[in-house]
View 1 (tube, helix red, strand yellow):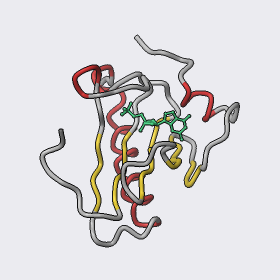
View 2: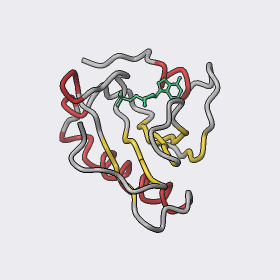
View 3: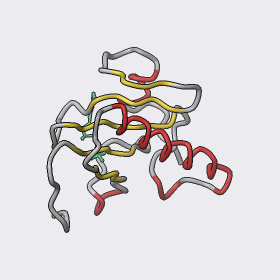
Length: 115
Ligand code: DGP
């Protein structure tokens, strides 16, 4: 089941503002409103997949595209020393917006494991 009308759908439709750093036919990337690192960018599919747990085999190419978009956006953000890509999934994963998104976190050394 997908939720077609999250805050991220509104960003895709330009109904609310966002600092968009990358866009193509399949994906959008914009800075996180509540940054957890000096660079914190979200990469989302335009297709409203609610969460990774609802991605299907038919989404394989799209999921690959999102990872390659994350790589591109991280490079364009100057994260030459490394970065982390995170997909929070569902309640225990800490997901709060139910439109699949990749967090790109960088610009400082990140601790592991996460809390
Ligand atoms: P998650 O917890 O993985 O579902 O992360 C959702 C992220 O979305 C969280 O880091 C804050 C961010 N966020 C929520 N609402 C907005 C918004 O309206 N604009 C932007 N740019 N980011 C948002």
